[in-house]
Amino acid sequence: MKVIRVTTSSKGYGGSIYERYIDRVFANHPDYSVVGYRFRLKGLFRILELPFYLYFCWSFSRNKDFFVIRNFNTAFFPFFNESQGITIVFHVDETGSGFLGSMFQKLLEKLFFARQRFGEKIVVIAKFWKDYFIQKNYRSVTLIYCPYDMESYEVTQAEVTDFKKKYNLSDKPIFYLGNPQAKKGFLGSYAALKSFPAYLVTSGEGELKHLARHMFLGFREYLTLLKSAQIVVTMSEFKEGWCRVAHEALLLGTPVIGSGRGGMGELLKEGGGLVCHDFQQLPDLVNKITSQQVAVSINEQYLKSFIFENFARDWEHIVQK
Image 1 (cartoon, helix red, strand yellow):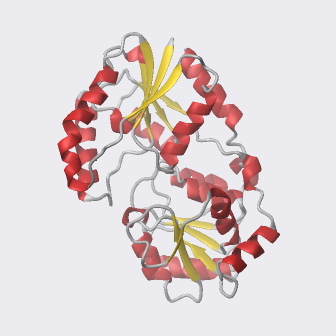
Image 2 (image 1 turned 90 degrees about the vertical axis):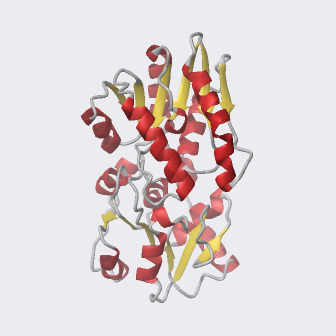
């Protein structure tokens, strides 16, 4: 049977990375293809494109002759045939999103949950979200964690030294604050830590990049930044699907403090990160970690168990089934 994955974004967010791993699983499948919708307009003008986007989503919900893998952002309409489609849900929470994004998410959630599609197949990426849908009476919820290419997370001390020298980061500790976005908790983290004698560094997408030391990096240098940091802070204010930044930092042996919201809570608890529920407590916790008053015990065995082979096996099984 032909398999089509429906996509809406090419940015390097965790969800997009997860979907590209699916593409790798089915790369040699002769009847696998990816179909995407890209908004041409920007900002509020995107509202004008909404009818075309909804038609795009509707057309793939009516399939009879192929199997559809779609993400939650395209799940406005129920599948005509529940057995020939699956929806990946990374997270369900519009907290901290901009006006347009928040309005879009609220409309999507209203349409999705109002139809009570309890028989539809759903894939989630953390136990938190599996419990979330089971509590809402969904019957077919499968947990498939995102994989990591473990060989990529070997960063040498020489790389760290060269990186700090290249970007003039050698004279103070580095605190990495993730993406400079309000919903990622950047403003609260920045306010809590700006008095520290440290470089507060961000990278990736974000509307607040002007406040801290923002860096545009390729993947290898991004990993070297995580390895170079004395601490990584992921104080997201929305319920995360997982938190790829936190997982990658822990894989590199860097202590992580996070809000633990959504799937991130499972990651920090099992992987050896520290949970901080309040920005006011963040400076004290950072002080204790940097002065080694608090022992950080990273669970390498757990973190390295997220391998591609398991991910591929689970996705091949669910599609064949």
